[in-house]
Image (cartoon, rainbow, N blue to C red; front, side):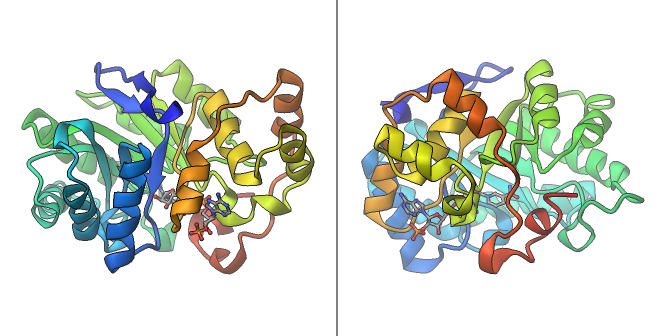
Length: 289
Ligand SMILES: NC(=O)c1ccc[n+]([C@@H]2O[C@H](COP(=O)([O-])OP(=O)(O)OC[C@H]3O[C@@H](n4cnc5c(N)ncnc54)[C@H](OP(=O)(O)O)[C@@H]3O)[C@@H](O)[C@H]2O)c1
């Protein structure tokens, strides 16, 4: 079963091949969703300081009764924090909110604050180096096992790689059929940085992508299942979000293989120009620049 499989990161830590996303699930709903996901077998739960649900995500893990060391819990440093002190304090804040001694993964949510995302004139290089130093120190102090980044482009990665004492181990990027960011993916592969793919179902809009319905039907699977399997076959860790037990279970049921020929068709799917009601969200709004 895919949920039991792991990749080994550059520092030897094992990371599950599929994660569970919790963006836009809050309160009792996220406590329940996390318990459901753990019951199905997910072991990697993805949250973020900005999701406002770290406390409830940790509550869901505790309520599931699973032992802490079987879990891989990841959060993200708020995109606005670009100072050593601000990031260090926020890491301690996340640990306190979650009642945890350590996080399995902590990543910089974005190279730029959201309101300045992909500003061609300001890459926040210095701020990201500061943020990275705070992550490195927290890693050395045993507060985090895996440190990494999110939404980083190649230049953003090089900025960290050229000055760091611990290399980034993961980069979590927008990655779905029609938008795989191949150059970033290739660069990360060469640099032994594991890519995690967020919005693997294109934030629920994958059904509108060319060819995916036809290919999903051919394999007798749903569009979300095809999307998740596609990322697994690319070696990317998909992070599907789902609210119901039915969806949570279905998304882990991907015991089929997409042929090389169909992978090539899916690789060539043109980008999506509409992410639905969340279209204004910076990474979607700027996805096709
Ligand atoms: N690093 C970043 O900047 C960043 C940005 C965005 C997201 N993320 C992470 O990635 C996770 C996933 O991304 P996402 O939340 O944007 O979207 P997604 O996983 O691409 O899609 C979620 C949508 O697909 C639906 N869905 C899921 N499984 C389904 C199934 N089997 N059948 C039918 N519909 C299904 C969900 O509906 P239901 O809820 O009704 O099940 C929801 O509407 C987030 O939760 C978050 O953890 C990270």
